[in-house]
Image 1 (cartoon, rainbow, N blue to C red):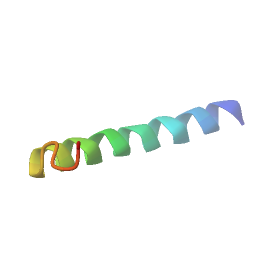
Image 2: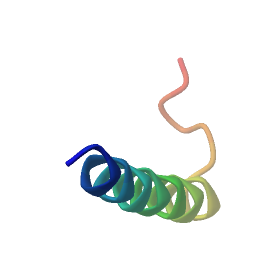
Image 3: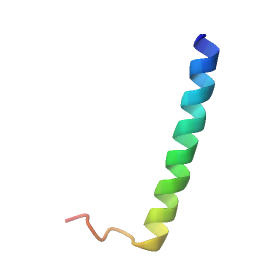
Image 4: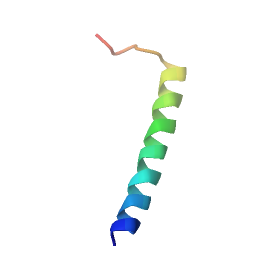
Length: 33
């Protein structure tokens, strides 16, 4: 169970990192204010 949770979490974090990278590339720090 623990290893499954770890795998899912890793995949989720990987998706978020990729998504954030795309957002930063499209509009860097537009709403940083």
